[in-house]
Amino acid sequence: MSMRLLQALADASLPMEIKDVRVKERLRALRDAGHIICSFPPRGSSDSEPACVHMVTALGRKVLLRHFGRKVVLGAKKPNWAHLAADKFLNDPDLRRG
Image (tube, rainbow, N blue to C red; front, top):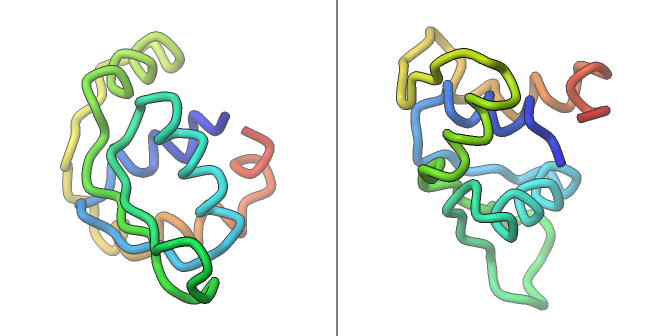
C-alpha cells in the first residue's frame, strides 16, 4: 500500500480526479483499506474515465500519523499540488515503490 500516495492525497485539495490506471489501482487498495473515500467509473467503462478521490478518512489520517510520525494537515493548499499529485506519484520512482 502506498503511504506516500495517501500523504499526497492528504496534502492535495480534494476532490481530485485521477485518470491514470496505475494510480487508480492503488486508490482501490487505499479505499478497500478504509483510508480514502473514492468513487470509480462503472465496471466495463473505458480506462480513460477518471476515479474521483473525495476525502482521506479519519483512519487514513491515523495511519499517516503513525507512518510518518507527524501531524497531517488535510486540505492544506500547496501551490499547483492538487493537479500534480498523481503526476508526481507516477514520475517519482521513490513514491511508486510505496
